[in-house]
Length: 458
Image (cartoon, rainbow, N blue to C red; front, side, top):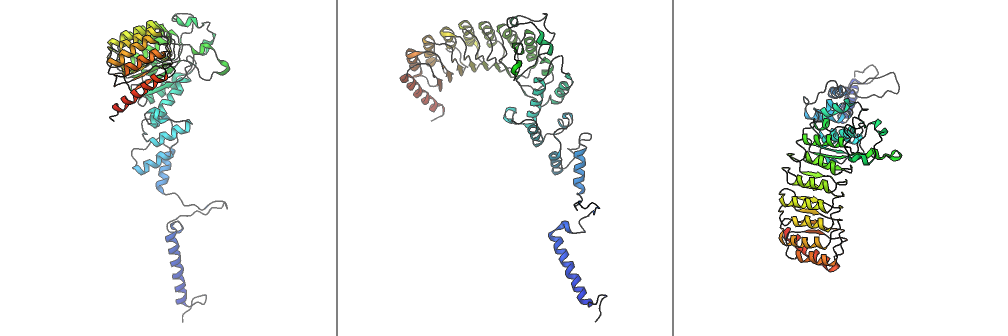
């Protein structure tokens, strides 16, 4: 019998070699990475080097695309599965001029948002992460912009890159020029015109340069003041000057796409409200105006009355927590009689008194469009209750009215109850802290439940 060099029979050696080959093939089948034919290994002199598989050519290409994306952005040319890998690996700190026009993937913009802000409520931005990123990014630049000190280059570049994606801005603070702190103006001087005076040539940022390059802007919320000023508090930080007002009014007038305008807690006086409203009279798209928490009195209310009878398409007006008295209430009421567009009016926390409330409510005998009215905390009494009695009997469009914190008393409560007995459209009437009496309050609540059931089709 033939033998090999080590003394084993050739047949036995052949069988053993075949068995080892079979075992190697079976192991390679279960562990493809261990198959020397499918894996390339590099044995390094460094004893701590790990024997890792060389990356696939496809992975190398993807890593190259990601690493050079800023200089050579390549995305649309890729297959969907490769495009997804690239988007997952891209840095969120790439320049916006590169990513803005090219990347629409919401996952990438979600990562970008969460890497910058701890709290991210995408519902405030149309449920779009990309829109949220650009709106909040621009908001931060505007809120920290110091006129005459901040280089406008970054703001201008961001505006150009962001213009297609911004529909809503919520500006919670605005800063004054650094040298404005030396001004000797006091609170009283803020009610007069400062144009041409001894103050600084520029006040807060001019929103004209912002609105001019945002063709899709629909909603703006602004507060003139400083957040978290701490021990540096000074009333001058919360000024809303005549120049600010004039610039803002012109900017809003030129923004033809704007539908919602909110100006909160900004010391808007009668004179400034007249300046603003004079630019809104023929605005083609403005539907919501919110001037709550300011200092608007009867003069500003008369200007609002003119707005209500103008060509403006206003559907919602909120002037809560101002200083509108009985004469201002009468002016708004007179305008309501001729208005056919307004759906919601909020006059909470003003100074209407019984006469002003009577003027507002009497207008609803002719107005056929208003559905929601808020007259809480206005010192309304029996005269207003009598007017509300007539409204409940004759008006068929009002569905919700808030009369909280008005001293109607039992007599006023009975008048409200009597009027509602024949009414079928009012489904909500808030009478908390009105002293109308438990019996009247209970009867009114039962009538409202009846109307609610009817409205729901029960």
